[in-house]
Image (cartoon, rainbow, N blue to C red):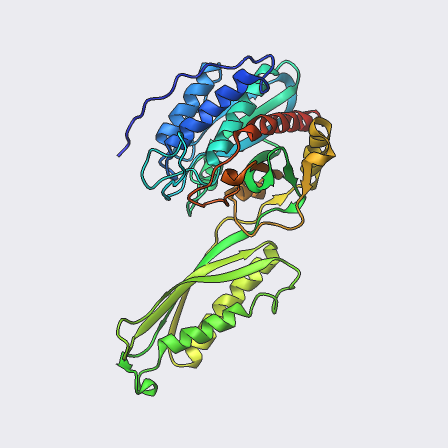
Length: 404
């Protein structure tokens, strides 16, 4: 049930110096901490969206009608006859208990912002306000959009696309917090930045249950799935180039209940994460064939279900140049961490890349032991001093794109 919460009164910053200045930091921290205290799960971000809409309206912007259930966007129009570019932030939290002992810890039991989406939304608010203050200095349009349900499957990006968020745009940018990088450092990479993440479920059925002393009489689905699992683990690096990142992981396993009864069915499931699209389809094909052939070979009935998840984020080389040049100009080359290889995690920002060039920046948010916990850890926190440089970089990169 949707429960309305009270929103804090926030003093808008001085736009002549935004996002710099004490007033700007206090404002941004206030936005982030409110979001952090009141997390909402995917497709249920009603209060989150209402709060963000209110902040943007207070600044004079006009949010759109809802897209993708709870998502929305604001357009910042510069001078006429220019290009159009998008900036995306996600809003949803995770179904995990927040274990931090801080004043702004989650007030909602079992839900917490442990992947930095509160930071992402706050940066997006800052980008919108910074562009609004500079709208007379650039030509074109920036659409800042707030997306629901990045963490769920299916996720929110396809629904945002379905509802037209990309109409008229030529490219899209986003960022993601990275607690492995120090505050003030930006992780940049052209090409694959994250992996595609697909899921699979396998079920093997024998003719009947049987006695553990006589497995030959019933068929043994437990033994059969162990053969299948061992074969699947050997696919990566055997049918694909071992230099291409890929990882297959089995995470669930279910079979019988009694120690002396061979069950009629056994099942398992897991994920396949691949950075290369051709490898993705090749591994999927071999996974399905392996299950069917081994199951049939031993007289069982194999069933396999394979679900495509988010594709890999492929950072456009041209946008990489835009962000790299902007980072060097604002903060120096020492602020750039050249990401050597893609993350095997997934990001549904990748869906937008199927329609236009995209670029995902890694934002360093570590400044102490308390901000060094990994993403999705129940103690995860981020250094709020990363907010201002993030807004500076993304705002300037968007303007650079419009001018290029």
